[in-house]
Image (cartoon, rainbow, N blue to C red):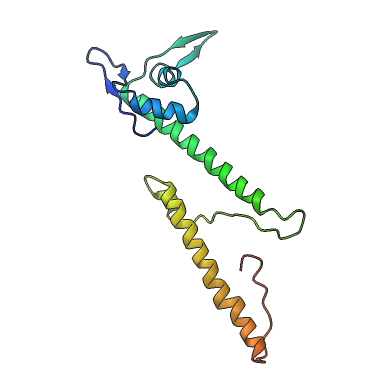
Length: 160
C-alpha cells in the first residue's frame, strides 16, 4: 500500500492516482474492489450534519490516509500473529504455560519507520538474551550443584 503514488491535479488541489497497478494488487490482497478503495482514499465520504458528503483529498491528505491505513493493518496483523502464536503455545490451564511476549527495548519506538524486519531483529535479540541468561544463570547453578558447591538456588522464572 505504501507503493501508491499520488499526484496533484494541475487546476485544483484534488489528488489523483494516475497508475492504479499497485492499487489493484493492494485491493486484491485486502479483498476489496479497487474502485471502492481508491475512492475511499481520494474522495472519502464524511458526515456533515445529517448528510454524507464526498470530500476531495489533496495529495498530502491521500498520502496521510494511506499511512494511517498501513499502520492500522500492521497493528492488527501483528496482534493477530501474537494471538495465534500464543494459542498454539497454550498448554491448557497449566500455570506458567508458554506464551509469546514482545520485549520493547529502548529505542524501538524512536525509529522513523518500524518494519517487520525490525521486529525480527528485536525478536532475535530477545531470544539471544534468553539463551545468554539460561547459560549464565540456570546452567551455572546446575554446574555448582553437580560439583557440590554450596549454593542457594535462585529461581529465575520460566523465561530462562
